[in-house]
Length: 184
Ligand SMILES: Nc1nc2c(c(=O)[nH]1)N[C@H]1C(S)=C(S)[C@@H](COP(=O)(O)O)O[C@H]1N2
Ligand SMILES: [Mo]
Image (cartoon, rainbow, N blue to C red):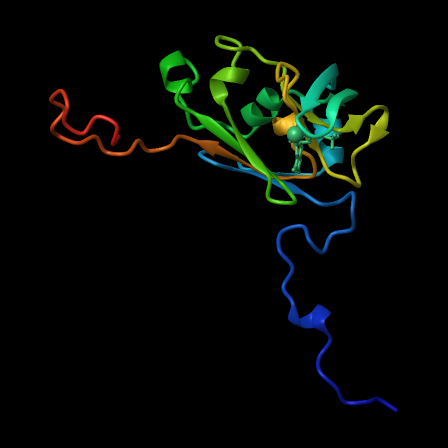
């Protein structure tokens, strides 16, 4: 005998991007000023790009030093596949772009494209597919910034990367000495 009752929450709640997918099939989104935004699983990161390895040490104010070995593609190559909106032939144009990287708990941090770009900082920043030999399909990808001494940008359980430029705040018209300095 069926009992009347409230509809099950699973039919009433609309899942957010990837929420309903089983762990390991969750996608994180690469969006922003891109010609081909991407929704990727950790398996996609492993299969579609060459894998690099980085042995890193990073430090946390509360936890002390951490030693890990990560594998995964270069973030630069993944963003390249998404078709950045800049003029690739012009270094000055490339130098204006930012990436905001977000974890599942809301922790986020920014990188500049120039940190990654081979003509500027050339940092081998990875989107990890494995940590210390264990696949990250269940946990989610992790940002790896080998040149960072602090752990804050080793963002785990990635849910998204935004790529683009920021509009500068408008400058006041009056820039005479002593006027407005410190307010812009
Ligand atoms: N998603 C997420 N990633 C994060 C953080 C966080 O709060 N959320 N904290 C960062 C900081 S401040 C440090 S020091 C390292 C700590 O890494 P551990 O947990 O492996 O020691 O994770 C980084 N990645
Ligand atoms: Mo930290």
